[in-house]
Image 1: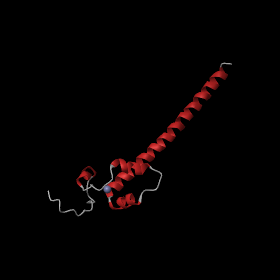
Image 2: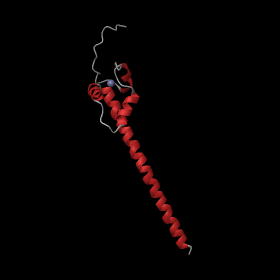
Image 3: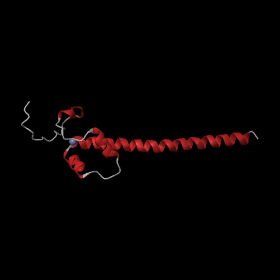
Image 4: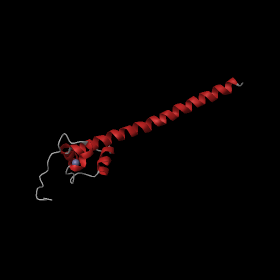
Length: 102
Ligand SMILES: [Zn+2]
């Protein structure tokens, strides 16, 4: 192994997703850090933004986390809405059943 050559090569654009581990990502933030950054409402740190601008692998992970978190948010919102609608339907059914029997 030749460790004297430390020039950072840009990620090849044709690199398949499953081979992303082959690129030098020793200076990349951890996946947890990327996910935390994607989930926070606060603006990103300058250092992190700079890294995302230079590192397509991290940028892709960041966007993936953003999309995933956004879907989770939508799911949690619609889940409660669904329960509320079901509850109203049950109430109206019970109300009608009560009135029909009298
Ligand atoms: Zn990176």
